[in-house]
Length: 423
Image 1 (spheres, rainbow, N blue to C red):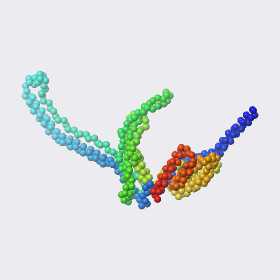
Image 2 (cartoon, one colour; image 1 turned 90 degrees about the horizontal axis):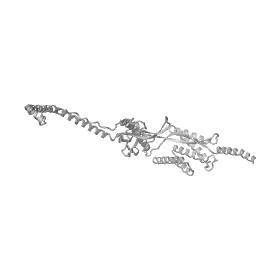
Image 3 (tube, one colour; image 1 turned 60 degrees about the horizontal axis):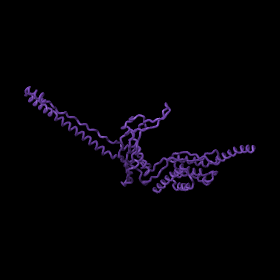
Image 4 (cartoon, rainbow, N blue to C red; image 1 turned 60 degrees about the vertical axis):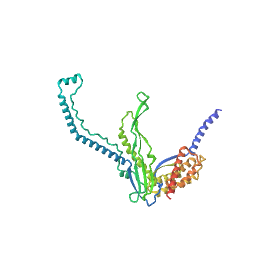
């Protein structure tokens, strides 16, 4: 029995070591790199090759209201000044009239005997001595200036924030883009207190402390209308994304009232205007532009010491290079991407998802599928991408993998729609 135990002790470490080595040989380490590239997106609403110019007009719906408030303000100031001048012109006569009246009353009063005056004052309790009552001096009524909505150099805004890819800015025979600013709408900032657990280093204990922040609700609706050169209306919407109220909050502070509310709103208004126009610009390019769009890709490869996966590493490098070159050298980029696609498809001929010892097991198969999806999307091949998606349905996936697959399904559906619209 003692010898048997000794043998078992010797065998067990060998078995564990063998299992570990087998695990290293079978299990591949999938790695990934993120690559940002730009691809040329087809317009959702094609205009034809003859439409190569666009013209932008930005205006504000509240400008008329501003003008009316200014006009009302000027009218109120004029009315107040006219009234003041009229009253000032009449004032000397009123003063003289009051003084004459006083002098006449005083003369009558002085005709009374001293005894009568004493009787009226001490016995009857009447003080009938006249008092000079001059009229109040006229004053110029103050008229409060109106609070106007912010005006801008609208031509500069259009030149800065609106640019449709694949088209030149020109007002002649052009696509007409009319953006109407509805105005920055906000609630008055208010200070809000909140209780937080705070750790005190000195006492080494946690206690409640009051913190303050300032917040307000806001929105800046905008309307965008697009007309063809012949005046036909192509688009007329007020994006809901710009029409809903959002809440802005300052960072919490231990002291209340440390923020200038007026300056806070003004500063934020500028940022909201810029982001709203950027949203409109993206919308216009999505509908009508041929510009390049940024896309973040995740390419996967197998990390190993030998050359067992040299083909997949080559494909990874070709695809990475191709995506990076796509904007500046489309021909070379597509050649490299197609080479990567060929290598990945050849590797998939060995795919055996049910065999964990296979070179192209389930994990590597899924990695290749996701790489192919990115390559097919960059190449603009919607049909090939949808074929890959269909093959992936036979494999079980993690939640994150299913989420990534769903995102690709949306992208390829959008790509196919755009290609069909542009045929």
